[in-house]
Image 1: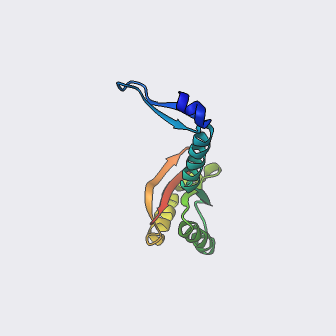
Image 2: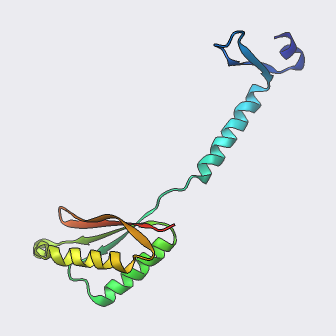
Image 3: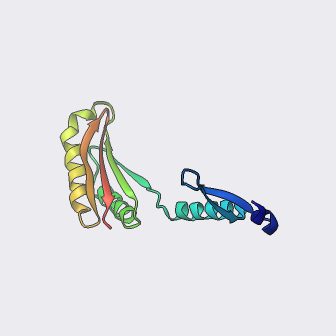
Length: 135
């Protein structure tokens, strides 16, 4: 404690359960600052998962499909996950098979850019499918 006082630093207990207890002479505020800095750098390196959505109708035309497929390719190339869904309005829920065929066709067309994470599944009036980008 005397040594720490003479140097104008703090005496920090590292391992209190050791016999004898392990202590270190250091500038505690500087230590905390460095630790926060390291945590912030690690947090910045962590990648955030971006989910992009593409919406289809059960009777989506070929031109519209191709247009949306190009957008989906771009999203997957950029490293974002893709949530493709078919929205059934009113009585169009009768065409569930068409919606599933449309999503499976999209999955097949985007096979080289990403892999299917979740096959088409009907949830209420939406049939959703998730595609994750290939590394």
